[in-house]
Image 1 (cartoon, rainbow, N blue to C red):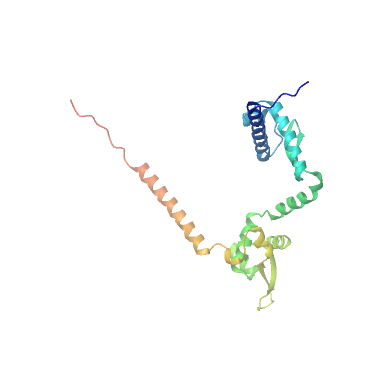
Image 2: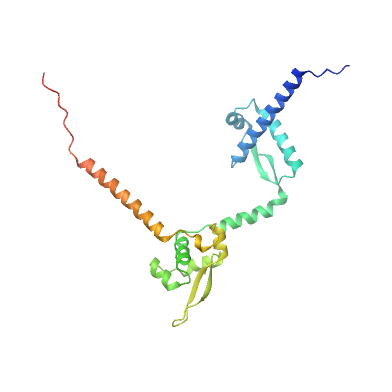
Length: 223
């Protein structure tokens, strides 16, 4: 049997199919990358406006083959009736450490308030922090010490030599700061808050004026 000769028309059609397949694969990849739970083939077809479920299956196979070739740390798995991007098992420990780090970085409102005072007032005494917040903060300080966001930087030269607190390098890392000089300026924060409060008061005043103003009677000229 003779091979079918290549023709310009045949080459163009093959290139068009290849381009279409690449576009479908890219669409499937984008959907699964953005999804946070298994996504069914039918849903992928609907969202991506794709030819059908077979196109999705072919795209997943092609993507996994490419991931394998370039040594990616993830692949697409069939899960709970759908598809989901998952990290390969050998990277489980790495991802677990990241999850723990994120959990440790979550702070309560009380912790954020206390940490802010330490950041702007350091070195600062526990008594000064509690005077500013108006509540005891021993437990909060212990929590921040455990998270390595603050540390004891010395002792005050006063009766009893109480401990002084300051922030750590971990604090800079968590909040994306190069140094303490990168902290927002307190005056700017205060002026921004006051401007917002003034705007709210103005809006409230306008609303009251509008509500209290008498309605203008609409009259028709007598004929």
